Structures are given as structure tokens and as C-alpha cells.
Image (tube, rainbow, N blue to C red):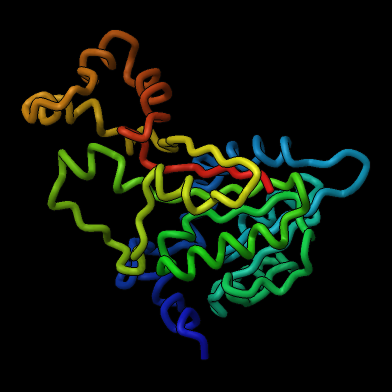
Length: 256
């Protein structure tokens, strides 16, 4: 039995003992629709070819929520995950194009997909496996195809690494945090790669509350609280939440 099938078992997705999920299947859909589907649809539109059915793969698909949504948008959408439990739950929900497998050897031919997504995946992989995953995604993408990786921003985000130095990630399977520079290096063999900050939920936008900590340490950072007061907290979130200094997530968008 592969290690992932025991680590990412039912207990990982329920109960909050192995992760921060109390009930992933119940909680995930609303969060996915708010946090990531707008970005995925934006990149899917850019990757969509003319004149034929577009194809996509979600790496680390869990129960297939992204696969389900892209299929509804007209994509030939597939998903792969190491978790027997998650894939079985997804299939039980009617998402038939999910399969169990490893990112180290994606069971698809070369140049198969127009779009490959990996949301909340790379932080679970040790550095060697993460590098292999990026290579495999490159292999299965068509020339000109688009890869979209999203990962928590614990290294570049000043809220985590300055204001809350004692922060402990509740998910013990997060073993490989990424920075902007690390992501750019990871995708160096792609034709191009861009890394963006993203803060999907306004509740994650903590930087406005941290400005005193920033200035108290002599850091040359904006007085975020004053900015938020002038333009409004929601507008500040939308503007500053894209900056890796404040962003809760990093998005790596790479072209094959």
C-alpha cells in the first residue's frame, strides 16, 4: 500500500485530527467556489483551444470538486490523487474520471492536456517529489498548455513570518513551503512562469492588523491600517492581497 493511501485516509479528511478538516466533503465546495474556481476559470479560458474539446487534469484532486466543475464547463476533465478514500468518495458523488495514482508517474501520455491544476498539493510533497511532479506536469501538457499551482504563502507573507513568529501550521503533512523565488525556479524549464499573490478570503487578510508590528520592527512596509481606512478594508484586501508580502496564497502560472 502506498504511503499516501494511509496518510490521506478518512481520518485526514474528517475529524480534524490529522489536518484542519472537520468534514472536507461538506465544507470544501463553498470554499472552492469562492476561493479558487474564479482563478481556475480565468486560466482555463486562456488555455482553452479553439475548435476542439479542451482537456484538463487536476493533480491531487481529492474528491474531484474542481474536475466536476470544469466538466460542467465543457472540459474533458480528469483527476488523480494518491488517496484511495478521496477518489472513492468522489466517484460515489458521480465524478467518474478520477483515478488513484502518484504525481511521480502520471498515468497519461505525453502532451495529453491543455490545462493541469494542482491546488494545495506541492506543500504536501518533499522537495524531490515536488520537482518530479512539476516535470510530470510538463510532460503531460500540450505545447502551449498551462499549469496552475496554488500553495499557501507561509514564507513570503509578513503576517506569518513577522507578526506571528510562533505560528504552527495545523496540517502536519505540509512539509514543503514555497516562496516566490522557489516557485520560479521550480518551473524554470517551462517556456514562461509567473507567480502571483492571492488572498481568497477577506478573513485571511490580516496585514491591516499587523502594521504596528511591521513599523515597530523598522520594516519599510506600508501603513496598511491607514491605507485600509482610506480606501476601505475590502478594497485594501483586493489590492494588497495580491502582493506576496500580504497574500495568503501563491499562484504559479506556467506555460509549457
